[in-house]
Image 1 (cartoon, helix red, strand yellow):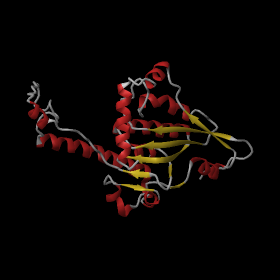
Image 2 (cartoon, rainbow, N blue to C red):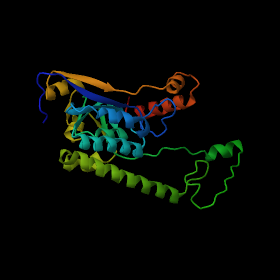
Image 3 (cartoon, rainbow, N blue to C red):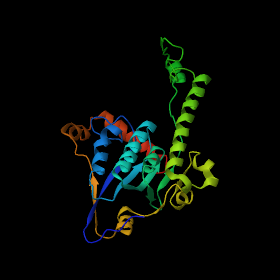
Image 4 (cartoon, one colour):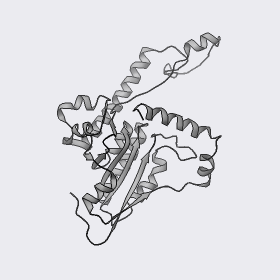
Amino acid sequence: MFKRLFSKSTTIPVLRLSGIISSQSGLTGSGLAINNLEKLIDKLFADKKSPVVGLVINSPGGSPTQSSLIAKKIIDLAKEKNKKVLAFVEDVAASGGYWLACAADEIYIDQNSVIGSIGVISPGFGFVDLLKKVGIERRVYTSGKSKSFLDPFKEEKQEDIDRLKNIQEQIHDNFINYVKERRGSKLDQNKLDDIFSGLFWVGNKAIDLGLADGIGAIKPILEEKLGKKIKIKIISQKKSFLQRRFSSSIFNSDEIVNKIEERIMFSRFGL
């Protein structure tokens, strides 16, 4: 429980984590990556007077490594600064997005929020038949028998598939252990197989499973815990000239690709 504030208003810093999680943040600064969030997370915890900080999350996931690095930065600073962290989910906190949410001590969602998808996915394409159809012969010369691992222009090898699954299982185990560590006894112990299957849930069902702590928006929850005299301060990054220039350009191919990828990932959850 939090101690209620009294006569003076207190500022509560809040950081928005919205979009896909990827190391490919580019010149526009789009996407969630440790390199473009590190300073913002430092700012989030810089106010010595705030008893808590907030995270507003709307992410379908992405890179497991970036998810882990961002979450660790938040958890470490919360311990160092002795602050509680509250997460507020908008449309979705799935896969890596849920990894970020678990950096908080408590997770609040909307009744329509999509939560979960604790699993690992590696999508790809195969172009073998296409090359044959158009009469193209691809030539690849390697040193090391596994150097052309999962080449999309060659027939799949079972040993490559088995190796990929082994890698995925290791990452999945890391994800499971992290969620267990962060959510602990809050998780429905009788439903762990379902919780860690890669499935996702909406609203109250996610709460029943222990994936979230309650329904509520950021301001009402903070007022309930800390009193009416609070001010929410959104921590945001000022874009550099290059970021503004490239993000506004219709010829920015990286940004277009990022937006398409983001749209695809959100659409997996009906959004």
